[in-house]
Image 1 (cartoon, rainbow, N blue to C red):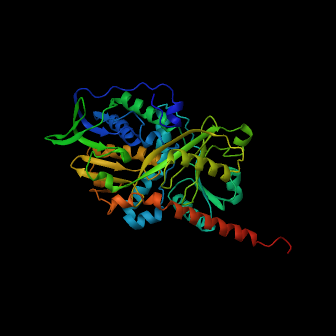
Image 2: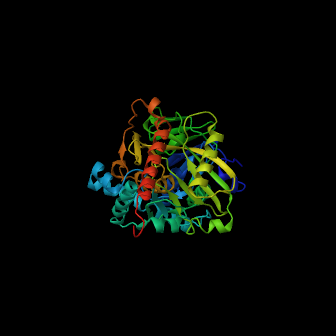
Image 3: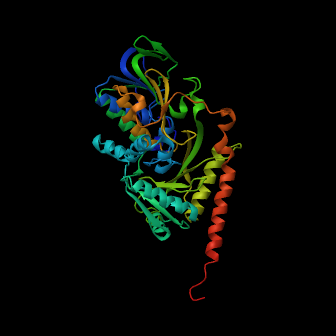
Length: 439
């Protein structure tokens, strides 16, 4: 078994599917065995299409198997009002509805296909680290609540009670979110897709995509797939399969750690409702527990040597400081993965030719949004024009000076950390200046 993350380590023996070793035909060919590809395979097979999915490594090898297992039904940086202002009321609201129901879709699929993946629709919480951030949080919650989401605002005291973390001004929570084991979820989707008729081949990297009279011909080392339509679902792991595609997004490497299990008395203080947490800091702070009471957190890295050793230790120190855990158990697992971040932080479908699409829906919200992307792409595969889908659809637009700007998230991290620290200093000064009762 390939051990790539905590989730692979605890997943037990994995019987790999054989590589493609023949020539096959399909209505729809999918490249990539992550959430987007697997969800598309399942939904398309349920609609009666013949589906072939090709994975270069094993199911959940890429970002799908290397994240923290947060199910978050919104956008990383954009609120609903911003989206309607940018895209217009009709297209904007359709994209908002796409995201709004994405977590419910995930947990519905888990229940319907009886996927054993430590899933809990326990909610997602976003604490605010400053007064300005709390104002944005309140506005964000109101915008989602006005569109039917279960969005609730909490003050500082309630935030501390629910999370166990101190120092936050307040927070908001979307109760449709939750947590799961992403590798077990992906494997469950794969099993469900195959049970519905999809064919999945692992260790089958696609070496070429060429036009054919009735669609496309996909070539691997030992076989070919002839398909009417093709969906490239590789996210940031596509390599040079389609020239220029990698220059349409920023690749962002994110590290994750999981500690040894925490003692029960500490576990009952922190996240007793087992939600997931990601706060408003520019240098995002996240935490959650798995079913064995391991504490999981992640972070980015500043350029420099030894990131594989240096960054996990820094995440562990931050976790102990932020949660007041002087005796935080040591790191049991550390891993990293690549996310694809679009310049506008929104999902995108890339038009690569008639019947050939690439999809990017992650931006740090991979599980919920990419699962929902699969359902939408099934409509395209069965005849709906891609331009009619709720996700923005356009030819590839390469980012100017991509070779330099691709490093921007890492290069700007020290500045982001400094700004977060200045916010914390302002809060401390404001609290020091509050007069005592009766003075």
